[in-house]
Image 1 (tube, rainbow, N blue to C red):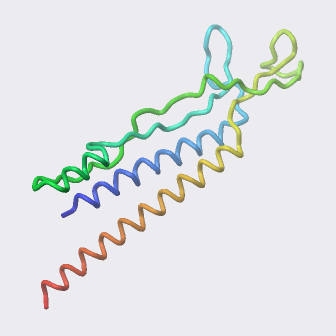
Image 2: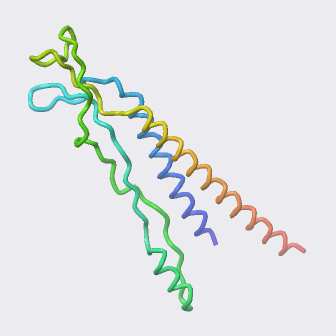
Image 3: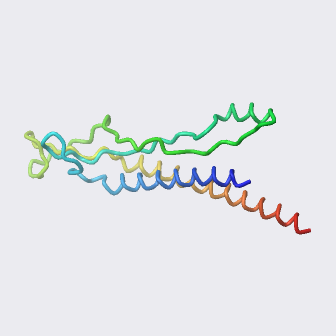
Length: 150
């Protein structure tokens, strides 16, 4: 009975974590000293959340629905928070900067604020959609209880 609410709750939790990681990316977009590796400071690297489905695939759920022992899916889980080490940061010529290399260039973070805002809008819309599903589910359960009272 409450399985669909638990499934929606996993999606809400995942989208909330996704928004937190995006917020961290935006907050650290100008950070040139995030980690100390190989004897020197490295700029902040963009992080992203990898989501993974829990339980059965959609097609296996459809085939189970045709049989008598149907079981619903389990929602979504966060499989990893990945650091983007592939995309290089922009190089800025500023020989006076404390993090400038021998040639006078400072490597900036690889966070693109526009991309982060688009990802944030997507995560927000997904969160709102899951809240709508949760509320619709709650409403159906309340109506079912009202039928029992009559």
